[in-house]
Length: 86
Ligand SMILES: [Zn+2]
Image (cartoon, rainbow, N blue to C red):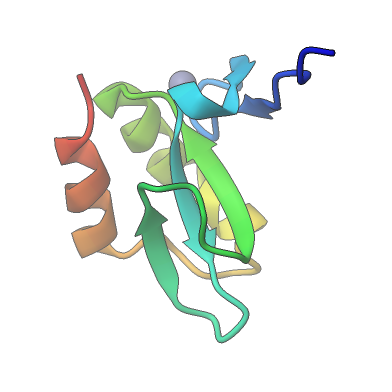
């Protein structure tokens, strides 16, 4: 049987899609925020389309802070994932 695709929602535009199409950012159990480009780090993950405007939107709407229990996306992580955008 074919594996069911894992569906995730973009933190910026709320669009749903397959997990593999998104950039994942993780809040690790020791409360560090890391860009999980391999999608393998454990922790609480949020997802972004490969689209700069989605990342900017999520920062403005404080969606990241809501998902990450009051922690904002650090600038260096935002920069890093912006480089992964198409
Ligand atoms: Zn998006």
